[in-house]
Structures are given as structure tokens and as C-alpha cells.
Amino acid sequence: MKSITRIAIRTSILATLTALMGMAQAATWIDVGPASGFSIAGSTVTYTPSPALMVKYYDGNLTPQSPSDIQGYINGVFGTSLGPAVSYCDNATSGCTAGTTAGLSGGVNSYTSAAAYDFLAIHFGQGELVFHWAAPVAAGTTFTVEGLPKDLSNYRAYVSAIPEPETYAMLLAGLGLLGVMARRRQAK
Image (tube, rainbow, N blue to C red):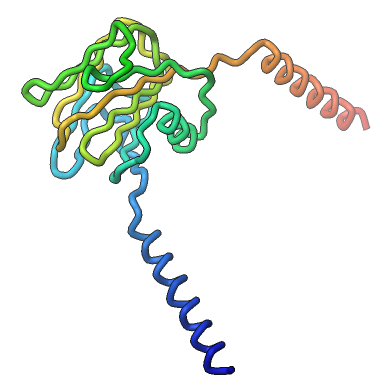
């Protein structure tokens, strides 16, 4: 009986160690921005318009690759909550939004959006680049990236949610309450 328990404990410890080693080798998000040029897998990547507020690179394959899944990753990586998203894709993917273009010619990839956006996800090889601009990139602006170490698969652009009036009202009410509390403390 004791030997069976010991075997079970050893097996459990071995399984835990194996899982921890697997997690340590898992792909992770790397901060490579906001510079307009950075290196990925020995290739120098440049882009315009620049600079972005932040640029993150994921060195593994994000699956699945649906726009809503990528939006979820963006929310997690940038600590934001995107509202209703406007998403785009390149011409190699079905369901593209009219007014977008993307292509691969001489290592230069370009994308022209039909609407403003402040997050852009680029999938290439097994990597993912995510850009975040402080102010939205204007509609009709051509985004260009070159030097990607692998062929580009798609682009996806997202617009942040604009806070609703109720959100501002709650913020102002909270600030007012803090002011009242501070005055009470000073009065005592």
C-alpha cells in the first residue's frame, strides 16, 4: 500500500515538473516598441506611421486566429478593453472589409484602412506583431511594414471604445466625492 502511494506521489511530482518546464519554454509577448525599427529573428523590421505608443511581438503561433480571439489577446497584452471592434484583413483572407489593401512585394507590406484604428495586429509565419498608437491612425492612411522574417498572413485593425457619457459622469462623481472627503479631513 505504501509503495503504491509513493509511486503515485512520484508520478504526480514528475507530471508537475514536466508541466512547469513546458510553461517556462512557452512563447511570450515581448515589448519591442515604440521604436520605428527593431529586430526579430535577425531581421530588421521597420514600419510607418511611427512611432507607435507600444509594439509587442509574440514569438509563437496564436491559435485560433479569429478577429475576436486576437481582440482578446490585445485586451490582455495592453490591459485594455476594446469595445465594438472594426476589424480588417488582407486580400488573402475571406470576408475582407471594402477599402482595405495589403500585399507582399519585395518584402514591403502595406495596408490602407477604410476607417481610423489605434490597434493593429499583423500575423506572419508563427509570429504576431501588435501595434498601439496613442491617437488613432486616420482613415485612408497607408501602414507599411518591411523586413518581416516570414511571409505575412493577415492584418487586423481595431478601434478602441470611446467612453460613454455615463463613464465620464461616474468619473466626475468619484472625483467630487474624493474632494468632499478631503475637505472634511481638513476641517477636522
